Image (cartoon, rainbow, N blue to C red; front, side, top):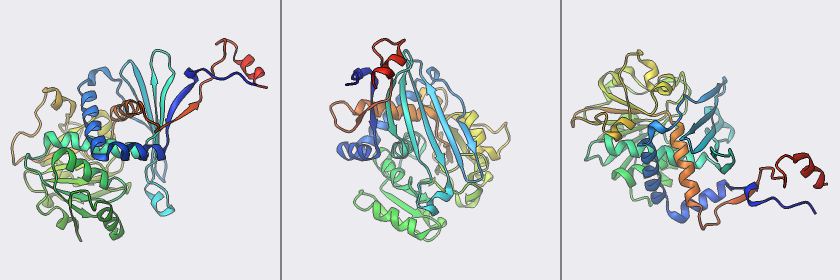
Length: 348
């Protein structure tokens, strides 16, 4: 019989099935609340993290990206794609997995699906920012683009910001019906709209989340009045935007990591001198957030590796005393660390 690996050779793996079980066990609003707080706590440790724009491999069909970071004690990376045409093939536009590891030994601590976890952390990040930048009395959100992220965004804004009504619009009527159906029983008033103009009527928060890899104008300047918070999360690669540049001229713009957002965000339309504020500075008190009730604030969000790091560490902590994972034997563990070949021989 082959020698049995030691416990160090095993790491927890969270499958899609187990991720769904975990979210239902704890409750999606609880998970979103806790994840929002975990991301904010790491933003307050911003200076400890390694930071760089993600490594992206672009093709005509889409993009494949690696998103790594470390705080000196733990290291994390996410593999993620973005392929807008996948929906027509019956595939997810975005699919992802991630890994968390120890820095001192290099040994992995967690391997997990991150398609669901990315949707949760993206919604949590949106809500983290909105609770600082949105008008204090915000109760209505327009959700323009009703794909895979829409329901997560709506529920996070309800749980963390206090949104009571979500107004849905998508070019595809079936996407609107899907989102409206899924949000039944969420505690939100759900309004299906026939145009994007109808959707933003009475909204204090506008979230844009469309998939097409194109310079698009989902919001034109005349659609955005004063006192609005825009949560622009769809533009996330070069050549893809959602807002007319005139909106940016009127808005106070906040970003995750400026060097990455200059490449991928709405601000790729703007000159290099266009002023932005990295959001961690608002949390630390180094910069102001919303300064008056009539101001337009814009969160130009492209997703950043620190948010994935936070999500992975949060998930690892939630696995204690649960059965929502499998143990994977993915690290060779010979009795003598120098005798890898001997381990192979003995297995015969």
